[in-house]
Image 1: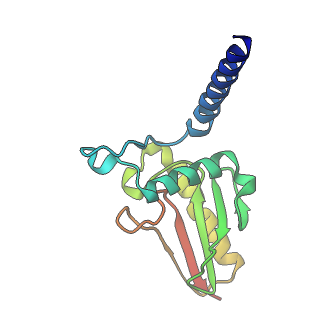
Image 2: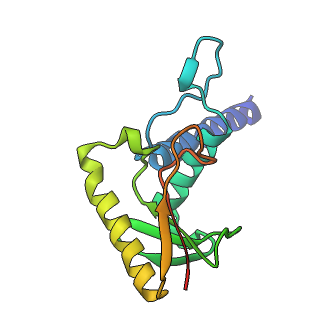
Length: 154
């Protein structure tokens, strides 16, 4: 009887700790549905959404562990692209969970302005002569998290 009570208490404690930790990790993320029910339309969580959600958590909560990070401000993280498509290729990521440009809100402006200011700093630092800054919409995103690519040649 006592052994069963200890086991139940341990499982309950682990569950409650999981709920608290999950609540902390997901607190600043946009809602995304985990339920793939037949009638969920565009609110189901697909692979791109899951990647975006996990990226959001990583950038907001564990930004010191972000691989290939080259620059960080209070509102932006920059990483070298792991598979560059140009001699200089950075990914500039706002620290706020914004899924795409169409879902921008007024409160997101400071994050976008900071990300573009960082892009300008990098362009000057790398002495880029020809460059582009681009972002993809939902149909083209491989990660459902707003980010910008700075690509160019010195």
